Image (cartoon, rainbow, N blue to C red):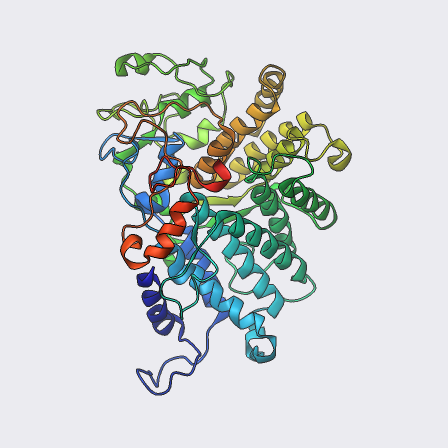
Length: 509
């Protein structure tokens, strides 16, 4: 972890010019003397939205069987090589923390910073985005450096427990939501909502639903901590809004002309194809369990891991060849010849990618009802109506963002899924519909699968670990040597307490 802090300190001097007084040593007399909050906010959000490569993008997409590899198949087969987290911390979380530190010091907040938006609104958005990023980090690894991680004075920060991190994130998002003032100027460095504070408040309530539901294994009861916080978010959402409409959704809008690049476009398309498990589910082929062992048989027999048997028109947007099949998942010797890939609508140079959608919010509300955390008196609608609305919103949102109108197909598909609801139950249908709607958001889909167990994914046949789908990422290799005490704290939060990708993080136990 020492490496993080050393790079972080140098980055603050080079990129943003730290405003602390260290005397004349190594001072650039021509450099900036103050931070630019707008640049730091936009830099952090854009950096997070463009993280690419196997570690920051592809691994969870493979684990949740959205995609298959046909070359360099190690990740799909659950190799246990150490992962990395440095790009989360450096110029991403560090930028946000710099804004937070400055904005929390109201007495010394420079008046000219108000040109970038009201102080409380800059602070609120930075706190929410910090929580979004830290959720992804802790979901992936487990216990991680949190409370001390962004303190430049600490070279070997402690690893906080995932329970502590989650409860802190929930409190921070609530605090941020409540402090923001829509009557004042929003942050000018906001590439998501362009400073629309009302929409950020809605985002906060939707994100709180995600945070609290992720704790449902640890706090399953209707009177437990997670349900209590979930209800509070629903109540606040009824008063101040949540992302229930497509118009309020949060998306990354890429612009390569200004070096804001789609992270998928940096990947080599010939290495990745859609998994047959995913395309079979989109085609609505019958479910077959267990998955056939023979690769040739798997090419002809359905391996649909969901209960869906109705063609899903979202394949017209997700797949480059909507009538093709994907590559069977988990075989070292797979071939992509004639198989479906991710659509160029998503893989292209300048598409949009979702951060938070209305379909996901509605499915989270429906799951809260299925768990007994809330009921129809709080939502005004029965759970089946909310599921139906979530599917319609998913179709509408994809149509609007990718320019292929599939909305006419939505009612028939949604109606068929309500029929499935009577056979398979709300818990399974909701989880499966999240899997469909979240594509290609691998980290979110992977977290949902670990928590719910749906869809019914079968481990890779040619696995490289002990034959289990990865439940986490392995800590960076440097941590055992540079921060041994923290590394041991990290392992203590796992079950079993070993740094393997099959160990479970706290909320997954």
